[in-house]
Length: 420
Image (cartoon, rainbow, N blue to C red):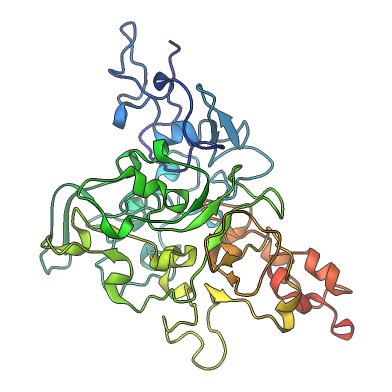
């Protein structure tokens, strides 16, 4: 039995593992019962949760600067790489970037040296841009820590994937003081996604089961969320990347998504607990099950569906921030955007069962129309080079449209005024 050495230790990522359906291969390809073989440790860094041979980065960033964006594991599973040296990226992007403005500020990958550390002061109070909370009662309150981002992880509480708020042990008490969340231990890393890889399937994810979370973590609930994000709907393509107009991920949007619903917009509550918002049986989910709703749980002020969320966005008759989960108009600039452009994905009003090459009435602009989740070669995790988006620079609509990015939707803006 070949020894497997974890390349990156003590870091947790949670992403779908395979390119076809469930995990394949012998159990010992991933697990070790005692972390011991012939009087030597199987995992050099020490035992991993769930008897695993690898931590999450050991699988999903097994060679951060070289190799390819896909790695074939010991059992034959094709494992997507979130950090790699390939010339093209997976749909979530690539953490292997040179500056902090190009990557999401995730402590797992920055502490492992894969991505640059976000310097103190880059964001106001070191909080997420567009923070929705008006008090310090949020997951980024770092009690006594110098940098709040040292708590933002890939999976679990203070993260994106898996169960996002269940506490692992102990209790949670709101003591009414400045540091008002006393938390013993919350689920992070492997504990937050436990069982989800074995329940994973490709295709439509309906995000069911999140509103009735069991007392124990449920891997099937996590697996039914798009990209293991609890409550998020969508359609996962097999290659887990943008391949063509007919083979790509499909995102779900909801024009009702708003941040005006109070704590219940994000938190599934359990009345049996003394503190329901952070209790063992509670869960932080995606607002209205949409991708933009999910992003808005941290970046609330950057979200505007037009559904009455943040009333300072657009009350004057013009948008003050770019809308999201907002139906694309069928007139003017947008009328010609009918062929799906991978540099400007749209969200669909229903969960689809296959990828579509068209942009249809009712489709929406969303957060991931412009950004990727992990990192990109462009500043602010953009799908395109913002500096190349130039108004009045192209002779005709087709040439402007081919530039993609902003001009995929705002097509006539790129055309010379005399040629519009």
